[in-house]
Image (cartoon, rainbow, N blue to C red; front, side):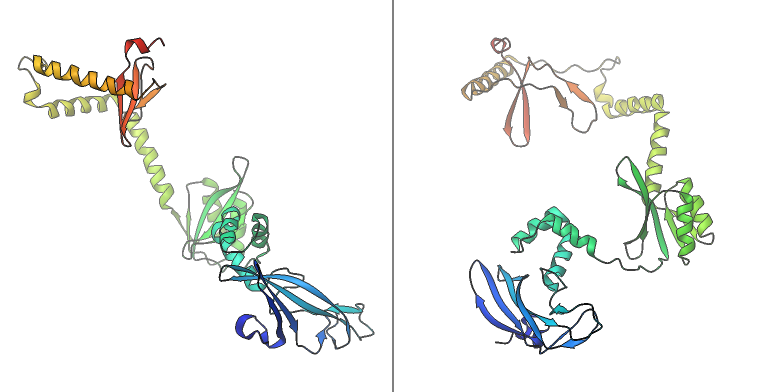
Length: 350
């Protein structure tokens, strides 16, 4: 039975058997008449022995697939070759000594680069690819680094190998949004040396560090240095806050003037005193007492008990308002409403 388009290099492979279980196992053999010695390159058709290799393949229809490949070991007939026997290889299907096919490794690398180790392993488990986080990290480390072209617009910033202990410099191509290189330190000499080895940088976006400014001037004197947007806005906010800190008295006067303007003529009693709220009528007082008694009865019927409440944060403010825990009680009537009610006297010492 021919594998057709199911497997790469199918012209040299043949499917011998298929077994369906919790894992689909497929037996595969080679149709090649001879093999090539990896040491000297000589071809040989004399078979020394056979062995079976188990290789994981990409899943199909939610089922894990294993390939049982029957490989041959050949004699090397070259008298000058130090390797007397060699194993048959299938470079289109898998790497040498690999336990996974090339296409499965490619899928795992894409998952690992997108999600990382732990989250990638959980997603792979859902896709019927059993793999550990350590395997995904190993696949990422084994990806060969590609030589990135020298960027025209270079972003320079610091980053931490280990937070709070060791810092370096990260270089990014701001046009392709890709990391170009990592430098082991944050010195001006390291940045200048990298720029001298990679000529062609026209714009350098950096923070306001003096080391990076000196390194950019030494390594690429013709490049234009730019303060990036993040650090520019951050420095602007810091300067604005420092300016406000020096004007506390003026801010208090402005706040009082705004409050007086908002109160208007109706908030003034004519003689400069604040208007007092109207007294409640007897009917309003009875209604208020009845509603308080009803709320207290509901609390007792629902077996509410006092809760420790250390601080109540006022909405829209940064300060915290302390509340006496022995005199207050929290009751949530809805997911978005929090009421604070007085605790009855006979509960306070229980």
